[in-house]
Length: 343
Ligand SMILES: [Zn+2]
Image 1 (tube, rainbow, N blue to C red):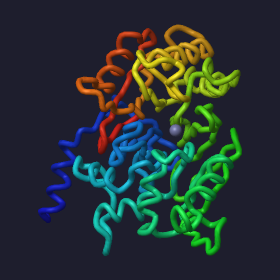
Image 2 (cartoon, helix red, strand yellow; image 1 turned 180 degrees about the vertical axis):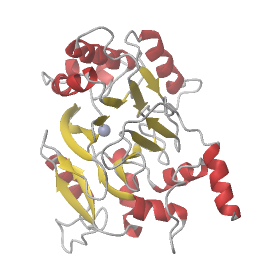
Image 3 (cartoon, rainbow, N blue to C red; image 1 turned 120 degrees about the horizontal axis):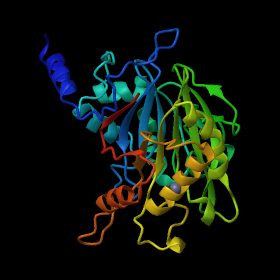
Image 4 (tube, protein in one colour; image 1 turned 90 degrees about the horizontal axis):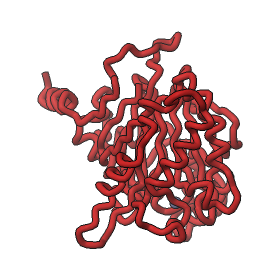
């Protein structure tokens, strides 16, 4: 056995994979694809740490290609995940480093929830060395911002396929119509995007499907009660409720940017533990039945680090969610480079 291969296998065995009943029998589609998801955290923080900003890769387990979910930090996150044993099943590259191989070949495209810098920085910086014509999926307003504010030959060269000439076309800005399903080429995933209220702009959630299994990834969002009369989360709970009832929603990923002691007026379109718990109550009510959310994995991200001595928002938020939780959901807090299996 080649030393490098043995190293990868060993590191795979001891990888900090968060197993959620992964050994339970897994439903299979007619094509043999497992009906569940694998999530790799490339970046998990909500601001400040420019080497660890919101960015995840998701795939149907066993698939060779991932969809990027936001792209705040990409290449450093891939390196960290490789260190932790991720991507061990992917074929090695001919010329590329393992990091380059994952970046160029394993990522089929990106979903960008909104164009705030902490959700796109890694994609922009690494665009110079990407290959192909990958799709970037998003709402029209998000793609317009990418084109106007970044891919404009002023902030950065225009790697997109429209806007300031010459358009280099490395990325295909692919507009999604809210609520309309589309297939993601090169993957076993389909997707449907829904708008979210996030301070002064529209953010979005993507609902992913493989076979009969679903996964919901939320970009930044405020609670409905602080969103100026908008009820976008309530609308989304209506979409998710039947999937929860049928045990087809395998997980939900959402932000909790700030601890409970931050005043509502200072949230600027983000959630605290108290607000997330309130919104999950609303989902439970919409779903009906007894303990409808029990056991549902809720992946928490976008926790904003603090520069105040002695203050640890991550442990505060963890504690506040645990203390306030009545629904029996399973809160997960992946670190950069961790792999999460969602059966
Ligand atoms: Zn944001």
